[in-house]
Image 1 (cartoon, rainbow, N blue to C red):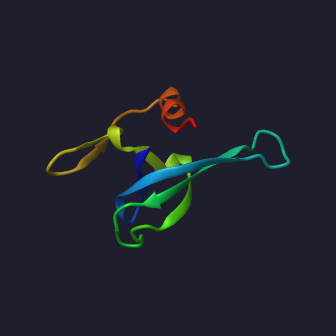
Image 2: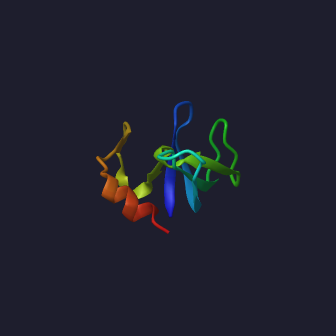
Image 3: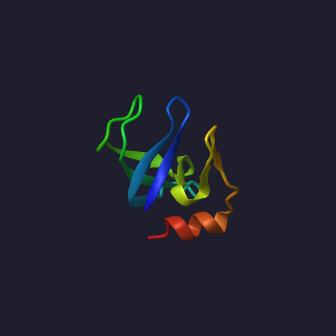
Length: 88
C-alpha cells in the first residue's frame, strides 16, 4: 500500500508499506504494532530506498491526503478505517 510517513522535520514523506508486525511484550495490554516501510522519494533526513520500522500512528494512507497548491491536508480517519487499510 502506498502511504506517507508524517515527519515533523520533513513533512509528508512518500513510502510503501511492506509488512506489519505486532509485538506482544510479557506484560498485558501493551501490544504495539510497527509497520515496515520503504521510502519511495528522498527528503531531508530520508534516502530513497531506505527501509524503516515505524509506529503505525505515523503512517498515513495516500488516498486520505488532499493536496492544494498551498498545502496538504489529512482527512479525518476512524479506527475502522485504519483496520481496513492496514489489515494484512
